[in-house]
Image (cartoon, rainbow, N blue to C red):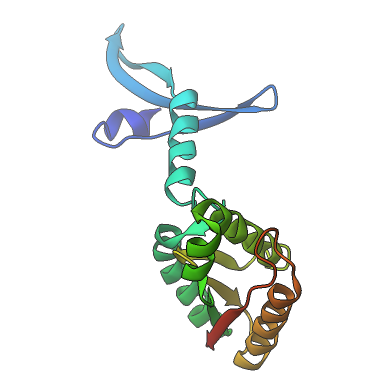
Length: 186
């Protein structure tokens, strides 16, 4: 409490687990003198709902609304961390980038709604095989990328080929088969 009182300009958050729920408080402290002794009045303002809403907004900002996977903002936020960890531990870091071949024709021939459904199904197929340590991102339109940790260029090429084949083998509702072009870098 004394630290909070002394550093009034700083804003602290206190997390308390209460009945299996995490509560978040902002403390404020006033110093008073009682019987010539310095005392502290500590007020805890509950900001649990505010923090929860803030987290929801953060997740919405970094999630592609159509597919539910991460978006370019999430990539931009995370890439420096991925690179830093790879350098620190001297591990491989690779990226797979791919896009749907002739996707404009899907939208033109079948409608944008069918195109959206195709993209959703495609991301479901890829998501089933992306590791939790990796990051799958909708780069824009029909372009996607996957950041792969601890994966050599050779292994990344094998993974990209598996994804390419899985997508090519899938029969998509309304449009049949589609293909994607892949590139990898390490």
